[in-house]
Length: 357
Length: 185
Image (cartoon, rainbow over all chains, first blue to last red; front, side, top):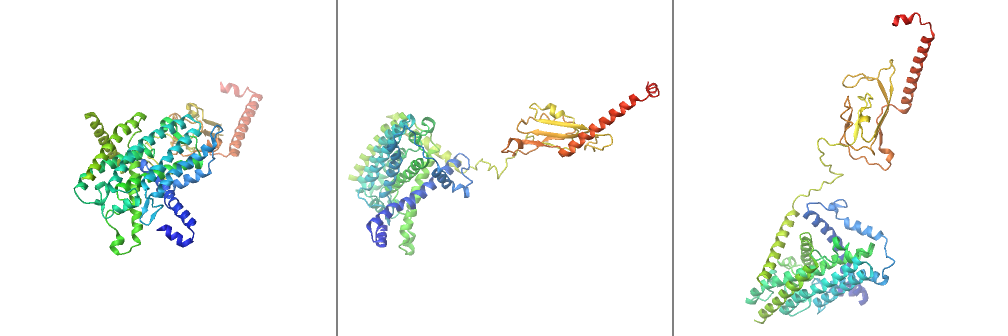
């Protein structure tokens, strides 16, 4: 829809595609990252009975912009023993990996970067690119802490992709589509049509599915938390053990790139969880635009609901971060292979049987 | 199997308990004091920058002697009998010009030992603690009420007085002693 608009405006497919591609970055991801970093600091501070940044702007809301200005001015340090090409590409690759995921995420019915039929699959695939970037960063830094962090990260992300995909497969089995836009459209109406409450089709199956959908949601939330390397699964960064893991050797804008990728990733996984289980951009209580008959208001409302759901899950990620201690490496692997994967499998089979009924 | 399920149960319950606690703390008022805007309440007997009330100082040097780090330096000159140096607030007559009274706060250890020996209670701790400086020399505070010229003048005056006295004495010694000496005995 927005693509058609830009195509009509500029008369060139290339220009329209470039604008369509850059739109989420400048309109959404950068402001979101700025806001999320501030929110993280505020949430962490208030959970510890502190105040957090207070001096730049009202309650420090401009603090992140000040920090970005500082990072822009910093020297870009490349140590002499670094593997320079890999070292320079790694942050870009990590950022591209997390940014590419936004291509298939439907922000509202009017805006979806690319309405792929393989939407969820595409997101899972490009998220795998992040691992390569992190491994590159760790290897090219030529630093034992970086390499350890990168190895841990690779082990962790690859392990936790399995439960994530198993839960996605569960949803795909029920709905029969990988397209996130279609998935969101299916869950239209009110909140009882959301997948977490058994999906849109009314019947015995819907009510039977509810507990297993909740289990599925918990599993995908935990494993996506591990995929974006957030506490309690932040062993790749583990400040107290590994300095700061794979980005120890990075400074200035390259460090900012990793940081941006982390926050972009946080929103991406929250958005996927919201789209799979919580109706994506659909409103839980119906639209004001329908009520008063203004059709163009609906996409804006949808954008609001989507952002609200995404932000809520981002907030829960922060909440968990400041609640739980970091897991040990063996505990991390045990949680994945002994608990999440078997449960996800059993869940998959049970939901499959219910769907067959 | 029983333990397996129990582990899952404890994990979920303990995480929820932890989350409940952190969520409650989101709404607990912060303990942070916004320092430059809000000053912390200092305890009643806090020890910070010293102040010397020169109106009361009699130049007795007791504080300088009590100081364990020798950060107080006092120079005094005796006042002439003709001069009126004023009185302290306790009605004590002052006899010395305090030509120099400096405290080096880069040395001061805020032990308050100088405060107790002071006979006129003119040196005391204030509640000022924000006096950092870029130059170390700026931390040497001079409390003397006399300008350097005046101090110099006092010194010259006293030296003159001494010299006059010595001259007088010499004159007396040179003069015939027979009249005065027996009287003194």
